[in-house]
Image (cartoon, rainbow, N blue to C red):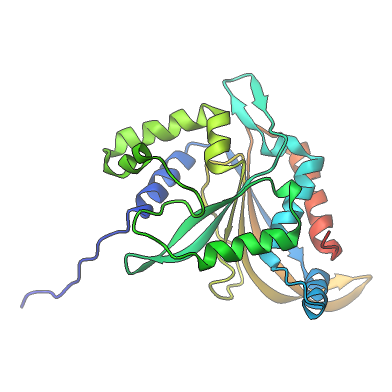
Length: 262
């Protein structure tokens, strides 16, 4: 008796995902598993919603990351050669948004440029526009028009595609222009899962946002139930040493948990 099976074509956008994973394996990232208490922040977001100002938690997290990086800009720097770091004046964040393409749900990046010059409300509008955008078969990066030669990428053999990625990463100005200097992937919107996922990235710093779960937390020697966001942070150790990493993460935690939107 013959086995029954189905064959599905992989969306072209997934090819870039495979390549990024391969290149990311060679990066010297340090993984940090963090818990953010977002109880006060979510309360503040709900208050603002009642006042007519809708801000998503993802947008606020992007703004919080931006604020922390403004105080610790080296964490989002690119390594140039072996002896130089290039730090850009602005923060541009690549956010993965799940879209349906060729009959399948796939993650596509949208680059939110200059988040340090935008409010959380403006970032929310930009994310929603990307989510609601109607896709064409040729879309690879949301809200960005690509040049004709960039579409040829998907028809190249794998070793040439990986060579292109290596070239991009060796040219920080090009890398920043194409993909920003921070990456964020939010899987928490898919469903509640009490845990962390260890993603891969080619950015100097990247964040994997998990689900929000209720956990008992000790506050002023009392056990209270709080809303906790599980986050994985990858920081390039070639760019940032251990002590600056800790200082950045400490500042980011303070900003996220403060409940202050702007």
